[in-house]
Length: 609
Ligand code: JFZ
Image (cartoon, rainbow, N blue to C red):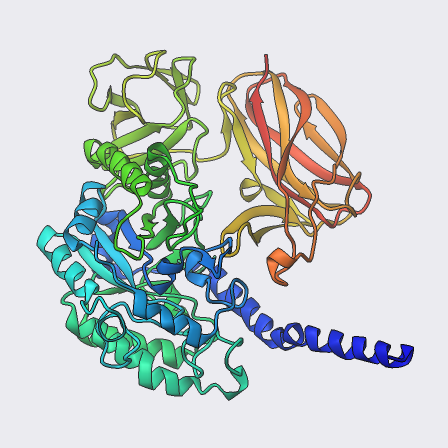
């Protein structure tokens, strides 16, 4: 072959190979619109209809479908990421025909509705939400609207969701469905599958009328009373479409709650970004969804199981911020539930049941954020201090509590607790050794109406996190950075950025006692901002620091065109000294360099010895 022709052939080959990426563009733009819809945090309230939700506080989420059969593998290769997305072009990119064939082998012979519901109940969960149809489009119930469903297309032939709904009713648990209303990768007219279909030919209204609406109608008419209809990834659905589904649910299930991912702000309660426990109290009706490991659906390699204590802590932390925790399990395609998930759920359930008063129907912490030793919930005139890290000093210091305390005890134990006042600090004297409870709870009965100054405080003993969200910013701002670890495994951090020459971040901290303390900085930084200089003013010190590159970069293949991949690190900055107690300022200022590409998450004050 002549040199010139060879060159041309290479060029043509390169173009052909680049084609899928070029056509992916429009799709990616749509994806970023979807990211935006996921990210919005609405304050929703369903009024009286939501009262049960405020009591329940803890629920089971279940991702189960054809993807469970693949368990993260396709054709001998493991795809890291959320298992229910394996069909997607970002993971294995399985064709509709290949994927549909999975139904022929889906046979959950070990499925046992009674065992599943008992697990949720014994774990202290109050309702169950399960995938009726995920993005893959396969209905896990007997649907007349589409034959692509478990009863008609699998050898199982039973409707497991009917069995679950009946069993929940029997055992006194609420029941609800997850339904992917916008994405359906099996349908050319729905959104999401651009690897088999041409999005330009899609007639969304056709899919909506012929599959989505009829299926939601089936779900709200054939399974008895539903607690929740859980929609997902609304993307660019119009308000009309969202409202059509809302009206359909309301017509048949007037008491059923709808989550915010119905889109267009028309839900009853807010579903926060996955796996996210917000740093400060959130108003309205909301939930945090999370999973027992990393993937939602079963993935053979994903052994990142949360411990019993981690699960109990998460339940407490979400309740302490004012929300509900919905924790997911991913059963295998044979209907069995991984033992690791079962054990930690049951362990957490045992703790929750013996401390039920501090969780169910409890309210958010009046301090509006966590302490480093634990977190607080409230009921009436009772404060519940959940101690995650038992302080070896034998003291818990509560800042800014105006009330006096009529009674103090450790729940379930007879240990002696005494209370002292130290200026605006309340000192709770506890045993030096942690009592025999995974997470001990100290109950304080208050006199009079609860009154707390919830400003930042540092007791000098347990670390204080000066998070960016608790600062006042001048010529810079707090923004949420989001990124994925494995595909679909979202992480986020609230960071100060948007710097200029005259930016200033200020925290006001109530310091219990003067002294020397260690100062640390949690941040991320790219190569361009490497060695930029900042000034920190605290107590008697004015120190200049250089930002050290943490390896932030953009773009990366892993982010699929979604931008920055931050690498958050904590750096020990030095020791600072305060000569007096009371309200102190900590100020962080830009000084010299290229600040863009530097993101500040928090400063931390710690005991120094
Ligand atoms: C969605 C689904 O795509 C996923 O498969 C799973 O069902 C999960 C519970 O919900 O994924 C999302 C939705 C929203 C966000 C992240 C992932 N979000 O707001 O960050």
